[in-house]
Length: 337
Image 1 (cartoon, rainbow, N blue to C red):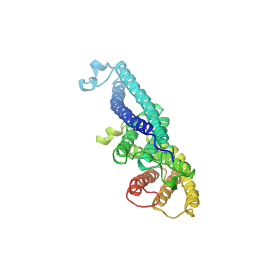
Image 2: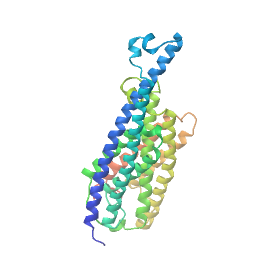
Image 3: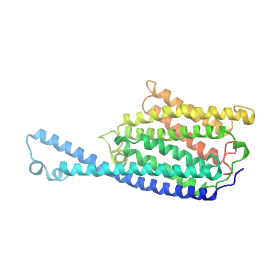
Image 4: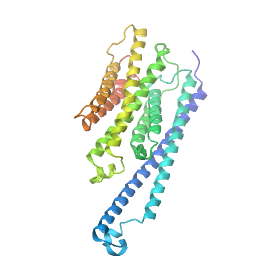
């Protein structure tokens, strides 16, 4: 068993902290962009309303023929164009920071693996490090389209919370894994489950936003939640995002479960033992598969299917924290080892 390279381990920790700071900066920029989009949408709608008033009244000049309270609230086309350009720059800066954050995050994972000469899944801290990396990679690829840039605050907030908790409460020094995990099945099984889970997180968040958008339709937003929902894409766009990501979640996550069963037969002499994490992982997969089925079934395609996807997300989070940290089992980290 090779000794731990403390230099690589320290470099991994530094890269983790750097990636976290970069993600925080990206979150701040994305929030500023989100707020600016709210103002731009309000300005566009006010312009449309004024155009309709002018059209209804015949030829009119905005500065002289409209009431002062309306005319004062209308932005000139040039001012609106400047706002939109500023918002685009913020969105591009956010995207650039996210790419940088993902690369530094990846360096942290690679250095962690090199420090212990093994795949970085030996404890719950490393598992969270990997799941968040896969989620960020998936998000940065999916959210490149301009219409999805407003989704960044909704992705970054839970990811940063997860990284903060992992880095402060679950951190473990780099060390060799127990003999039971020294198998070639280890990286294959856990990687498949982690990739599937990370994509599932993005899918679940998209379904949450879809429900918010359906509750606050475009152009009919009201109150605080209406203001929050205003910059979001249409419900159809968010629903398609949730569906297309879930299409990847089901086979990849399912493959991870199957590979785990094969490894269990080789290690413990049985394919399935109803271990708590095995059971909840299977339930999670069934829920994601159920979501896809409901999404293709008449009468279930809208909010009903979305609720199933959200339930799958909740089950996955329950599996990550409660099953891993509280319940004792062959897969759990109840002792945070």
